Amino acid sequence: MRIEDLDRPRVRPGATEHMLADLRWLGLDWDEGPDCGGPYAPYTQSERIPIYQHYLQKLQEAELAYPCYCSRAEIAHAASAPQQGAEDGPRYPGTCRHLTTKQRRERAASRRPSYRVRVDDERIITFTDLVAGPQQQHVQQAVGDFIVCRSDGIFSYQFAVVIDDALMQINQVVRGADLLSSTARQIFLYETLGFPIPTFAHVPLIVDEQGKRLSKRIRSEGLDPLREAGATPREIIGQLAASCGLVEAGTTSSPNELAQTYASPSYDIMRSKLNRFIHHRTT
Image (cartoon, helix red, strand yellow):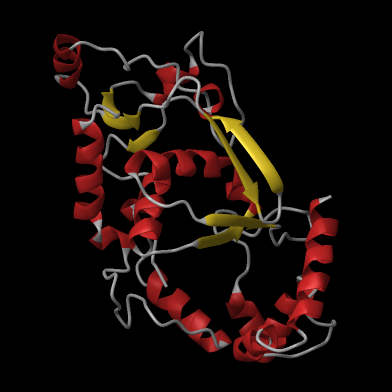
């Protein structure tokens, strides 16, 4: 269990404790985490800042990262920065990539820089996602040199999770399909930092009645209304498992019971059902 709380201004007091309590109530547990320790502590990203600073310094010393003094508005209005969509924003045109020492000193006098990683102009990242299949991205053409540390000193999600997953020896990443497009950037960082690359599986998101993904940003309902309505953890886990095609609708279960099923002879049958379900959802 890792708490990803780098964007401190957006962290609500008590949110982490509430989340951990909800997971425990559902019957989930973990061998390592912020509340029980482990060999790769700390497990809270805001306590790992010196680690990220160390790796940023390594990139700078190797001239693989550089300070950028551009604002978002300046990048958006750059003639050579066509829009890439709401998720990734405009492609960075490389404005600060070749600044001289004098130019950097002049700009630093009036603006605090962010830091961008220098992306090879011709590097094409290819990988096979365990759900979405073969993927390919020309990172420089898609997003350009991307930010690893913001001008306010907050390290980017891309940078922090690569370092954390590598140092915590994570060998498989399973997450929502909304993060598939950022995977090529993370693989680029794994390679640049000399870390082994895990396998990736991006699964379909849970959506509401309007087809919008559940999110705190739009105040989607969480567990509290279900719990207040009398739903039990076994019922909720059963509904979640059924939504993935793991069990029949109406089945109640616990996380431990599902885990034991994976270790049983019926696992191959369950895996086949899950693969068919995911294929149906993604096509």
